[in-house]
Amino acid sequence: MNTENRWVKRRVALVGLAVALAAALLLLAGLTKPSQAATGDILRTFNADPGNSCFFGVGVAFDGSELLTSCAMDTSRKSSRTITRFDPADGTKLGTYKISGMIEDGIEPEGIGALAWDAKNDQLWIGNANHGPERIYRVKLDKATGTGQATLAFNITRGSQSELVAGLAYEGTDDTLWYNSDGGETIHHYDLAGTLLGGIPNLDPDQGLYGSGTAVANAETLYKSKPLSGQIYTMKKDGSNFSPFASLPGKRTDDLECDNQTFSGKSALWIYSADSDELTAIEVPEGQCVQGGGVDPPPITCTFSEILPPVNDVSSATDAGMSSYKFGSRGVIPAKFQATCDNDLIDTQAEAESHPMTLKLTKLGSTPAQDTVVEQTQTGSANTGNLFQFVDADDHYIYNVGVKGLEARTYKLTISEANGGGSHDEWFSIK
Image (cartoon, rainbow, N blue to C red; front, top):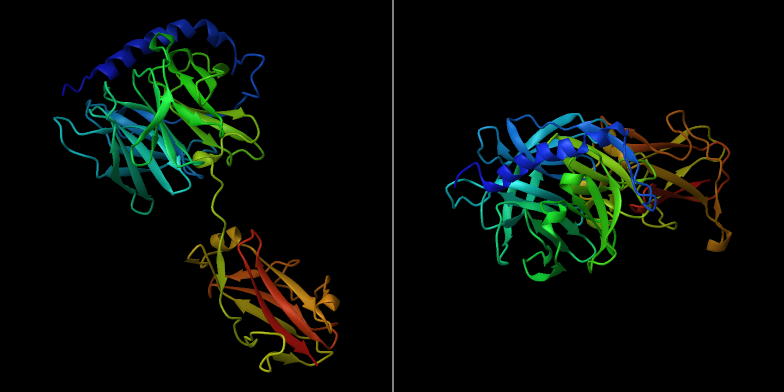
């Protein structure tokens, strides 16, 4: 295959025209938007030059903490399988992933086109570039090694083929993908096994919608870019209510990706301008554009070790083996334990800060109805409020419960992960 393939020739030729037509618009600072658009303000923009001898990039994805961009072709006009990582806060380049596992069955290996993050299945979806037929892959990334393993999900079997998957979006509400090719007039809708479910036809390439990015706004709506004019549109998933949302004068608007985590209290749409290697985030209406396909992250699940010595681990408030402390003592009860959250032992300070643990001390009455929460727990100096301290050297949490002032009763210690990850009870007595 000639590496100067037709989609690159067409895009490069049109970039000059797009820039010339936009010159007058560059006199307008920032983002313009139609009056009916919701929000649309620029939240952040930065240069995202991948380096790595990349000649032409296509895709953008957001994994919940980092932005990822693809490179379809390097400066020697050979296919590239490198994905570059950027910090969404300031555009700092954080590293790369080298992708393996893509099919080698042509004169030229496949490059990487559009990207989409799948938060539900914790994986990246990629489309190929520089090679037909068009293919969709799922990729598991390993940040520690800077690698990604691609597995073929399906081939695109619809009629005419291009050499680039230009738009790709994961739909978490029903585990599906929205896809369009470079030069394609239809947004196609597939399940994850490659069964064609439908689509939105008759997107006129003369209007500049070909080769454009796609993102899932919510259960009813998609975002769509119009690269050469710098426009962003919204449309219903049946193709109705196609309307302008915002524009980036003088810039291409290629692949799109959602992010409701980077900007506090705001949802954003990231736009990749492939010709200038820029990433721009614009604000979208509240409740739209949930990161990773519109699926809330799975609930945190934590398990707790037995309480560690010197406190005895017991199973109930009547267990004869519970630790007992003398009424009127001035010491502390060191409540220590280890925790495992989402199958990962908490063994660093950073992990402990992501999984803060809280204490509730309950004075037990004769019946559960007479139980009383001890609001003002006397503690050692190591603790603040109701938060456990984490001891990194021994990988455990600790709370020093002051005995002074506690009545002669049985008490229940309830340890809880502050983000809803679960809880654990222990008991002791004052006599």
